Length: 251
Image (tube, rainbow, N blue to C red; front, side):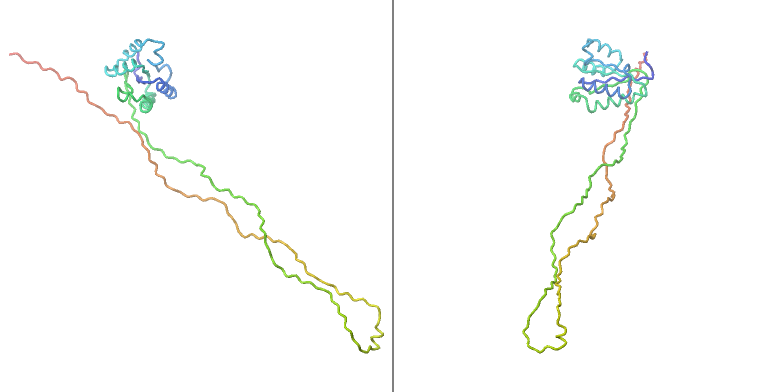
């Protein structure tokens, strides 16, 4: 007996790869394996296509949907049947919607619907989903500067004036009388004249002539983010029933 809190979804995929991706997403969404069933595709290797069609007919689908799914099975498609609780129904529908929008074979757009999904038992819950744009920010490395210092040698020249002294002596012929005092002062004597000179003395002094400051400053800019968001729109069509037949009164 079907659980009235469950909704059964049926979706058709034209390639096994797309069906496998949908199954993986359903498992990741938390749908238990016992709630999922596949018909056709790889499953048809172990069971006859007639058995898959028989199983499909037990779902009590509308005739139009049943025909679409039957044709898909006969052409080698894969059906995924999911019996989901109300908690998982929204996730199942989003998985099928995602696959239908991006993964299904393009030929389905011209030959037949990409997928047929129907609620066949219990109370159907249609989630209305609306996306909103969430813009955050993260720090990224934009590069920077690296400062190196090293010493270089540059040839320089300076001029300096050096002073030197040289000893000189001269002899002059004279003829003059000598005094008694000069005679008494005659004795051995020695006179030295020292020669002096200057030499260049080289020294170096260091001074700070410039400072390079390395840092960073923060600036702000406003960036306008443009994207699209989706939301579910629910349309309700009024189904017109048959008009009651009015009988004619016989006279």
